[in-house]
Image 1 (cartoon, rainbow, N blue to C red):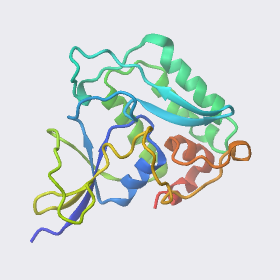
Image 2 (image 1 turned 180 degrees about the vertical axis):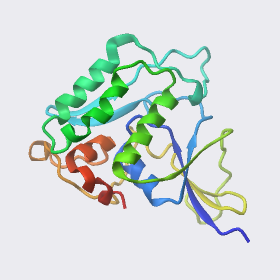
Image 3 (image 1 turned 90 degrees about the vertical axis):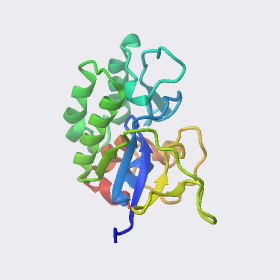
Length: 222
């Protein structure tokens, strides 16, 4: 008998929010969707950081797809707007006074010095770096086709469905979204440089947690 396992299904994300990494760290298996249609204004190409002037969204420009429906794995990053310089400058401005920015800056800087090609590859390279710095080792797999969740069993949450005999899958591809109101009671507050000015701001990009808390960041992902 195959033991039941628990898999979380996630979209790719650019410097994803804390919630994304909490889910990644608390599930035995993580599957990242590669075959969904690319959708604008999601974490796929944007992250949210805390600047001295409040929340700031950093968006990666993409090459306009040839058709309205383009798979995420085929999305290319555009080079217009000098975005790499602007993103790194914004990150430095927001976090250079945090306790651990100088400790990690050299790890992130190279990502903004050479032009990446595909959004998914860029996101995944950053995710691998972040996981390494957090000292977490999620078991990652990638979809080989679009996963269409069947109707949930009676009494289950709509995001929960069965994966044959291998167990349950928690589908958070659309749930972790910058424009969806979410209860972040499962996220622990931590020290933030601008907390005295704006109060604690939950579920920002993982770099906010990392730059503020350093090697203690992983303790906030349970």
